[in-house]
Length: 206
Image (tube, rainbow, N blue to C red):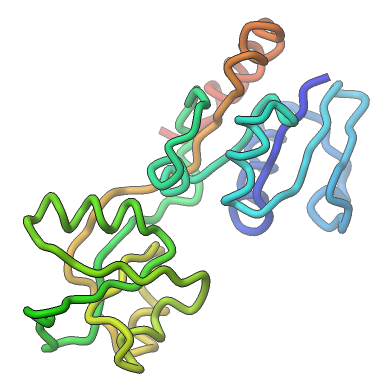
């Protein structure tokens, strides 16, 4: 049995649609289920529903053979997993944003984000020394209340930024969801995993 860790929310919905296009028989109530572990015996598969940041942890530690994770998580976490396939779903990008017309504080510039590694690496490459403030939610709030000069966050439509009076300054990287695998699982279950990759590859939008 293959165990696949999947994040809840938009990625989950798009991934389920992709699996169905690849002729995997998933129960109709699959997307509506409140269960955290869903078994699909007819496909010899089991799905673990997790928070996006936890998917990579489950795969790295081998409790899941495979996982579906955003490239943003892969860049931030740098875990011991293999990236097998760009599923080209849940497209968005990482960007630097802030209040229009507000310059970075030259003495003690601060950047709020839930991606501290990506943010510090990006600003270091720009030759800028910044203080990183890690937040877990409502990153857009930081410039509004004076906590930070800039934020680094995921931008999908840009609507949330606009509604909060923020603008995008720089794009850091494009982000899509990837199929990742535990290195040991890839050796032990290579045939089943290669078959899954083949079926998904045939239906991934170009």
